[in-house]
Amino acid sequence: MSRVLDYARLLRVPNAFTAMADICLGALATGALPERWLQFALLLLSSVALYCSGIVWNDYFDLAQDQRERPFRPLASGRVTLGAAIRLGALLMAAGVILAGLADLGADGFRWRSLPLAMVLVGTIFLYDGWFKKTYIGPAAMGACRFLNLLLGLSVASGGTGAWGIALGLVVGLYIAGVTLFARTEASISKPVVLLIGAGLMLSGLLLALTVPNLAQYGGFRVHSAILFPYLLAAFGFYIAVPVVRAIQNPLPRNVQAVVKRAVLGLVLLDAVLATSLAGLIGLLLVVLLVPAYVLSRWIYVT
Image (cartoon, rainbow, N blue to C red):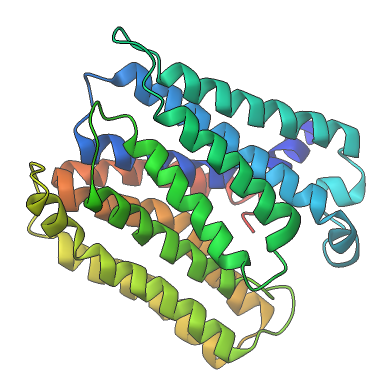
């Protein structure tokens, strides 16, 4: 049992539900279900595999730092060997690409939509984990990974999405870029100005979300926006802002880490709110993904 828990911690299993939420958002936003349920299932598995592989490679590249700052982690402690982590990361990455390729198969031939996105996502994951993470480009690179994952979810549709799909991806990308910047020095005392910039990026993503229904409508897409959408978005902003303000005022590790945990798992909530902007209140069904994520986070860390 302890070995299973070690691998679950290495993979940050609770966070995988946030990757699922991006794909579910894409399927609901495009109205691809139930007609394209098989492609949806393949992309759901592809997204989880790619996300978990990215987490494994993250710990691989951060091994020396984790041995100093987080020696309790499975790879840093030696409970999971380096060779096993490399094999697992490679296997998951290959599986993610193959599953995306299968999602492109259809009666009318190969679509070349999901597979290219998955391949670009693989490259972005490696760039972030191996080179950009410790640079100023790091938050943008992490945001790009989430942007691509959301586009992977939108690729389930039989047709294109246009500008509104890009805007929807940017909402999630900006939000995660802000969270990544916020978490940059979570193991030590953070600089308030960095936290402010991170909070500003998260806020800019939420503000951009307000434009998505109109962009979709102008693009000829049939929108079923819930009247509660802007109020739900404001409530989500308040939910994130409370611990953010506390952390900026007192940037101790425990305060910053509390924000990061809420913001990372809160991506499921954000995706649910965004789904209501295009698919109506049925989008709130995504909140169900929070249940296993929060339950598992009692034993498995998310940062």
